[in-house]
Image (cartoon, rainbow, N blue to C red):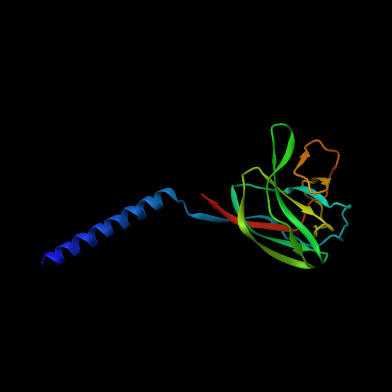
Length: 182
């Protein structure tokens, strides 16, 4: 009888701890919400070469509307054997855009490429997505009705907001996917 009472006390204590842990966990962890930034809108514009050293771009059509933990991306490449790196740009107080996070380089093949990140990267509301493209530009929508881009030759970590290297070309065909706490 003594063993049964002791077993009941141990089981009751364990259940109480599990309940407390569950309530505590639920109170500090909010459910995650799936997010996507970007598009794969067609039709496709002809491919463009990039200068020696590659091209870093900030695509103003890819502004982040909510904090996101990016875990994958989809890129439409109209060239084989291209290399890209996703860059998260933030406007700093000094008037420069600065890379605050980036992926390792990915090799692309012709067509749609789905890429999974080993470790997620975080973009905050107001950040802007961009790319470094080594060999050629990825596919772009031929509509060119976007907000434009600024760019710089080479794999850059900062670009001045008032650079003269800007134009109306944007609409790069890529999407990032991730989760955001709400």
